[in-house]
Image 1 (cartoon, one colour):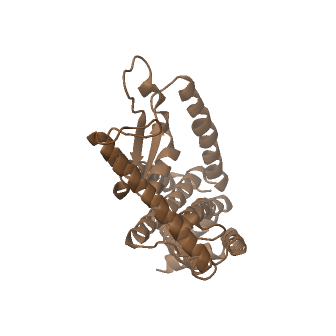
Image 2 (cartoon, rainbow, N blue to C red; image 1 turned 45 degrees about the horizontal axis):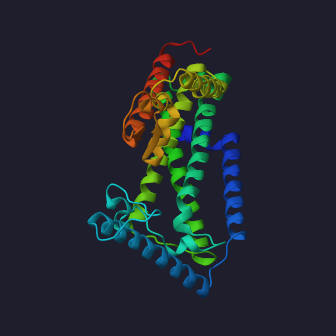
Image 3 (cartoon, rainbow, N blue to C red; image 1 turned 180 degrees about the vertical axis):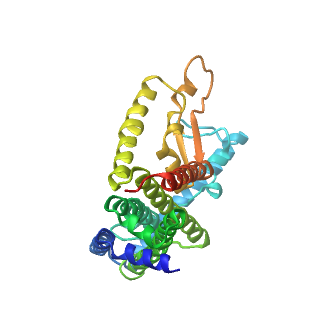
Length: 336
């Protein structure tokens, strides 16, 4: 416990961590202030008009579905402007993921139910960057300055020291991220209640938002562990930054361009960013250009999806491999 307490004090005392927390608070304040300045609480007249527009749009969707069924039954002659899919279920309002709501027709109004997810994505992106940089600098600075050597003189067990550093980092980030995200969403929920419009917030909305938040917190911890591991292997904070920069330039940009020139099948499945997006959003769709080439008769489905399961497997696998390599190297290498 003394080792963990000492590491927690060292982590919170770092100026870089304090600077990043200040930047996070500034970003929160700017985002909240901008939202307050650009929103107003809708009047009864605005709400009534928006409800009428939403109801009218739903009625039009229902009429289009009924007309599709009538055309399929042969009781109505199709017109030139009619859209008649192979299965009328495609235009069935009851099967749509989301029907028009009152909030869709409110102008200049902050709607919490609509904006909560984009706002949470923004927060997660900042916290992922925060976690990676803090994780890399936390161990990188100690290795470069000799602080780890001094710590090993007090506690001469390498894996215990490195494990305490990593565990303290991840636990501290998890608590900080959970508190920051709860405060962040609460502020914007209050804005929606007072100077905006709450919007439809049923059980499915909160379940979806909670799942997104949970995936985001996991991504923050993975990013911190990866930054920590790369900096440990490279013995410097710059090693983690350089590795990420090199990967983005050489692989995400360069290799992607080469794969497109070569007309490779499904190039996105070779990119780490694809699995990151799949994990964070739950599912992403990509277009495979090679699937619809050659002699194809009829409809060609070139879309393919990546779900959160392979996304988690790739990200977690990468973190485990890098952390394992970092611990193995730390056990054997000369630290002086």
